[in-house]
Length: 237
Image 1 (tube, rainbow, N blue to C red):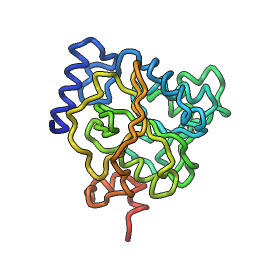
Image 2: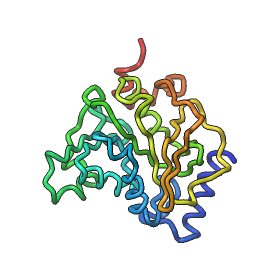
Image 3: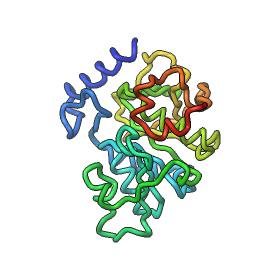
């Protein structure tokens, strides 16, 4: 099945089954799902999570329980500024600098600006654990996002700076309906998942797919690069 068709199928199934959660509709976004908090708890039971001190996470609703849990456990959380539009294109949430009553609201899209420091990619330390939002994913770790490519691009930027590498654990939390066996083979720029976690199970993918080796400049238009200051700075001369 083509990526676009698979996305639509997953969004439709989540909506029709009643398993989708706010925001509605699930279409066109990383879809929120029932028991996302249970999936976050299951993710937090893994050894890789326990060992992590720094977490880079997507900003979407289904991974909000993951971001909240990270802060409560004393982990520093990094989230990308939407569309990487600023030179300092990552939000840094350090729980040591947050009041305990702010830990729930700080990692939300609507409040992160109030609590986070904006930092450039050069200021991001080594990331131990990456959390990605997904529309669909396979048991072998092939991930399909909503189609804009920012998750893969953010990883490529950090990879190029040595902030993430082959030892960094990459995980996603999803509903069982999002775990598919009819996804196409990933493209070269697609970042594979090491862990796929649902409310019911933890899948250690032992993914056969290689991680991309940096920013694929051929996949970016001059207009896209012009809109993202970090790409203008990193672009090879």
